[in-house]
Amino acid sequence: MTSYGGYTQTGYGAGGNNDGGGFVGGSQISGSQGGGKAVSEDSLRPVTIKQIIDAELSYGSDGTFRIDGADVSQVTFVGMVRQISPQTTNITYRLDDGTGVIEVKQWLDPDKQDDSTRAGAFQEEQYVRVWGRLKSFGNKRHVGAHVIKPVTDFNEVNYHLLEATYVHLFFTRGGMEAVHTGGDGNAAEDDSMFVENNDAAFLKSASFHAKKMYQYLNQSKSNEGVNMHVIAKDTGMTIQEVMTAAEELLGSGKVYTTLDDETFALLEGF
Image (cartoon, rainbow, N blue to C red):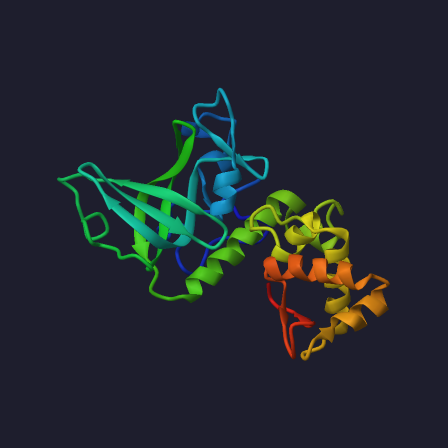
């Protein structure tokens, strides 16, 4: 099986089986597949849900999507079941992997139902792995599932994010050889497969004084917090400006009061 710069297959069998699918890139399929058809279009690609949501639909290409500039239709991902909607002809699952939420539809075949397709096979708040094809209907994106299996080892969740990251870097930075030589230098801050850092997103839209107070508290690293009068003195802001900035930071969940209502500390990890 062709590999991504030395990477071949997952220890958790994300390829679906030992010899099927696989994460294949950088080569061409020949013979019965039609000569110059890119491998990436029909090979299995590990992704995050955010990548599925952000995938570009290649118009005029019979519903093919593009992720990281490569055609892809078959995907695998891991997520938590948030909602189950059984229908006469299918079961619709809403899955959440921490980067986004998407619907997964598994069509029912009365003659071929197994444990994974019968009603009640999975429960809400349960982690599952999905193998399926990207679909778009009525401007709404979903995944048509070929197979859904329960995740029995939570390490698979973390392992999947790592392998999705690896393949993402293969397409955006050129594989291990490019990484070892420093890559192209243009993708150092690429976070397109995950949700944006909360602090970075907040600072983009925060007011000038809120940014100034946030950066000051971030540098102070005081568990007991810093009094607003000290903040005003050290940052050159007025008391009113500090109070306004504090209200903005409190409302955004970035700081909290400690010793009293005039002493603030940064809420770490958010």
